[in-house]
Amino acid sequence: MLARRPRNKEWSGGQSPHGSVGAHVAAVEILLYEKDCEHMKQYRVDELRPKDYERIKGYLDKHFGSPQMEGVYWVPLDPDLLDQVQAAHVDCQPFYFAVVLEPTVISFELLIRTRKRIRCDCIHYANEGQRDYIIAFADSIFERLKILT
Image 1: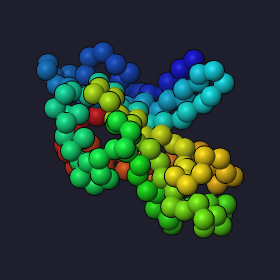
Image 2 (image 1 turned 60 degrees about the horizontal axis):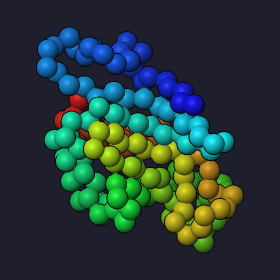
Image 3 (image 1 turned 90 degrees about the vertical axis):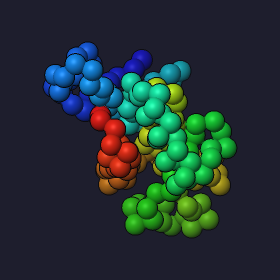
């Protein structure tokens, strides 16, 4: 089951909201992906063009290093945004969110996690401030690279 909530209510696909022929605008959605009783919340931008993929890949490689797993980047969460549980779990720090880049899609996962443990009370979905940070981070990449969304 895939629940979609378009970010731009005026346009959920099809013709560009800008009305110009040939203008390419990537679709932006916040998704709740449900598969076999597992949930993954993510901020997702699809319909990337090949040159946009290459530019985003170059940006992520430069700022976060080459991914250890193909297309998966670990972006550190600003320590000022940690909740009480995360701040108390000093041994689990630093905390990250994953960015998954594929040729036509980039997803910013809203699960805040550590790379030191698989399960812990400090690993959970982003709170409102963390979610806003991740979305602003995602949007900033597109702004810096001048890619329309």
